[in-house]
Length: 219
Image (cartoon, rainbow, N blue to C red):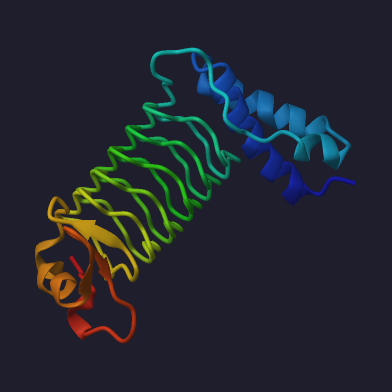
């Protein structure tokens, strides 16, 4: 028997699937279709099988701007270069997803799971990353200007070339790697330098352990 919580979870996954399959369809139609399928499905295995993987329509650029993808199952999805500006991805599963070059400006990523996600060259200006799990995320060259990083997990992240100017509530990212191209918030620069070791020519890693009080930026 499918519970209401399971139906809500799978409706979210279906929304993601339908947005990828029918990017030009009206958002209201996609939401209604996903809810109708989830409501009438009686077998949990069928719904659990609907996961988004490494497929997307043969388009030059996937347009999901402003889409409702709350809680969507997008693990390992191919969203390379996708337009996700203003998209609601709160609590979405984006583990291992290819978001290289994606446009996530203003996107809601609160509570999203981004472990090992690839965001090389992605744009996250003004994005909301409250409590997002960015553990081991690949953010090489990513633009995070003015992003809200409240309680976001940047542990062991690749921040080489990342732009972090003006981010909100950023903690010192333990284990993160960075280089001379990385642009840190002004109040964090000296702390990062003090708490980092060179691990290869021109590449540094932030040490762990007890950090000084100024290791957290509160803007």
